[in-house]
Length: 393
Image 1: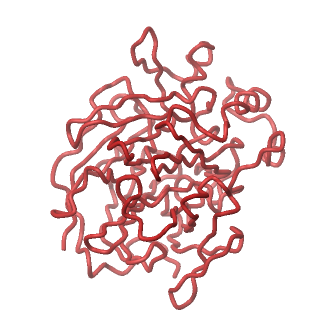
Image 2: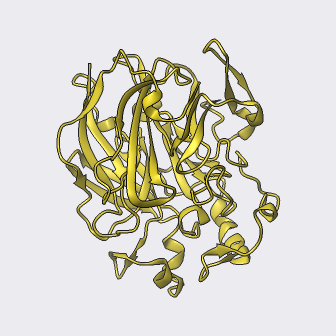
Image 3: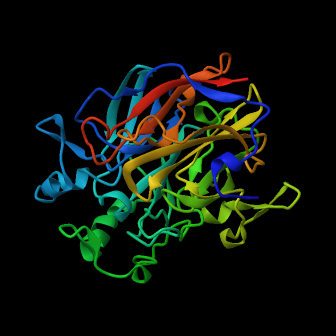
C-alpha cells in the first residue's frame, strides 16, 4: 500500500493515541549541541547515544560552542568537532546529564557532507553504531534540496564507545583532505568518483538501506524475540518515501554478508533475501519519511514506529510533523496512533524522535520522547530535548 500522507493510514484499534503529559524540556547546558541521537540501553545500565554535528569542543577543559568556520582555523580542535561523537546519558527524565565519551576525532564534515549517526544498539555487552554518508555528499533520492542518506556501515565497540572497529577513523581524514574543500563546504569530485576509497566500500552502498536504525528490545537487547537483530531504514535523511527492514544473526552484525532484507508479500507476510536490491519496502509514505525509530513493547505485543518530516525540504522555517504508527510485526501492516502536523512549534522544528527505553514504564505505558531541534538556532533549540507522553488505550 502506498500512502500519500500519514493520515491516510488506517487508525489503530489497539493504541488509541498518544498524549503529551508535560512540557518539553531542553537540555540545560547551552554549550552542548547536536542532533539525531540514536539510543542504546547498555548492559551496564547506562544510556549511550551519538550526536550528529556536535558543534562544540573542549577548549581549556570546558565545553565550548564553535562554528565550522571557526573550527577550520583551529587544527587542534577541528578533528574533534566531527560529523558525530559518542555520549552517555545519566539520570532519568527531567534530571539527566550528558557526558562525552569519545569525540570520534577525524570523522568530520557537517550535515550530509560527512559521517552522521542513525542507529545504535547494545547486544551482549557490545555497542553497534550505524553511520551513514561515509563516502561524502551525494544527491538525495527525492527532492533536490533534501539531505541524502546513503553509504552506511556499522561499527562495533567492546569498551562502551572508547574504541571502534572497523577503524574508519584511520582513513577518513585522508579521504576528506583529498576530496573535500572545508572552506567551500563541498566535495570537489563527483559522487561517481566516490563509490569506494582505497578498496573500502560501505556495508550498504547507496540509499536503499542508507540510514539503519536498530529496533530496540530493551536493555542490551534482552527482550529480543529471536536470535536476530533488526533494523529499519528510510531512503534518505529527511522527507523520503520508503522504509526497508533488515535483520542479521546477533553474532554477525558487522558482517554485511550475514544481513538479509524483507520482501513484503501481497498477503502481508514476509520473505527474506540477502540481496538488498531485491528487497521491497515495508512502508511507503511519499515524502513523509525521515530517519525512523522503532521500539518493541512486550506488555502489549506491539512495535511502535516513529518517523517525521519537514514541511519544507531540508529547512526548518516551516516546522516539522510527527507520525507514530504501531504494528504486531516489524514489517507491518502499520496502523496510525498519532499524527501531529505542526510538531511542538515551528520555531523548535523537532526532528529525529527517539524513545529512551530505560525511561519508559510499561505498567503505565508512559515515558519520554527525545528529539532534536532547529539547527539554524544553536541557542536555544539545536540540542537534545525531551517531552513526557503516555499511550492511550
